[in-house]
Image 1 (cartoon, helix red, strand yellow):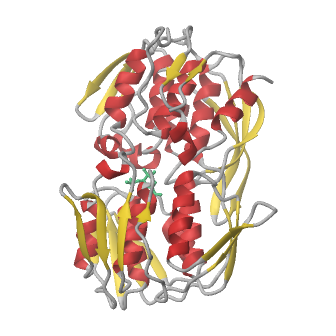
Image 2 (image 1 turned 90 degrees about the vertical axis):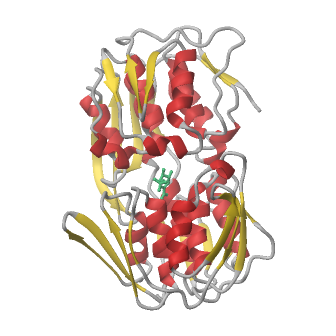
Image 3 (image 1 turned 180 degrees about the vertical axis):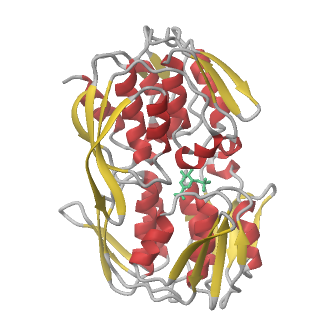
Length: 440
Ligand code: S3P
């Protein structure tokens, strides 16, 4: 459990690059692993979560190796020809690996056991079990619908039409991935649009899929028994990782930082919108397309932020960025109110409760509401920071550790975080990158 105190160390300057997008990296490994032939992936996030997906795909029969130039070469096992894993699949901390690969196992005639760490083992899986059971998979989970669980897949599985009861890209993707090896057309209806990397990338790998709108809802129709052809994937930088630097540069006076190559898919870019509404100074340079995704270099300069009421409609497009936004709110002038964040309670930790405690420990004024936080900002003055001997409990949650690390940069005493190890799940170089940006 490496604890660390993050302290104020001056403005963030220069040009940095954040690692590859986590969601896109998982999907690139999975779909390349299902294609027939060799794919190459550049910019892959080499974090623990993505490596858990790579290890699982190897167990399913794909050959995956890192080349000397840092790219990854994947020889697919071929959809429908997967091997049955010889041992249980250890998903570590990764909800995305678990839920998407449960979909894969569901339509293959095999039995797979999924296990995970203490955080993942507390997270709800019924949301994926329900549609996959409709498709014919038999799934036995621990009481409460959690890991460890066993999926007994069915071939051929049954195509379904599934209307998402919660806004979840993981549930949508689990059904679409199960549909790949299922005859006929499987439909997913999304009342609220969530990140669409699965749809974009599956189309790139040659799956037949149509997306449209009916009665204001998104409808995705996937034609099963797909033939996936190999392709080269270039993974853009992760907006969820960039968020920590967007907030850090916004709250530390004198900062002027450029974050190169950040993915700005509209289903992910809510944090940029919300920070701008608070008065953040963020410009987009060199807009372009990378790997079928919109990308730009983001220049962010210190600004005097003001509290806002965050529109619940924006929540799905910044679902992972709330811990960082809460830190921005703690330094803003006036009050920020958030609501409609029930899903935050079932992430790697209960991010509403854990951030309420963490910010209070660092001296912020914060109130927990039913499904949100109300935060009264300092108006730009530094937070007091944690007291001698006190440290923020990160609860195996990388985004809590990084968000409170950023809070430390704008604090008088610094902010001590009890465990920085979870950061390696999504952003292994976060601490050196932050130190480099702050010491230019
Ligand atoms: C993800 C979807 C989101 C997000 C997670 C990654 C994905 O989860 O929070 O970090 O890659 O599909 P939900 O589907 O549970 O909202």
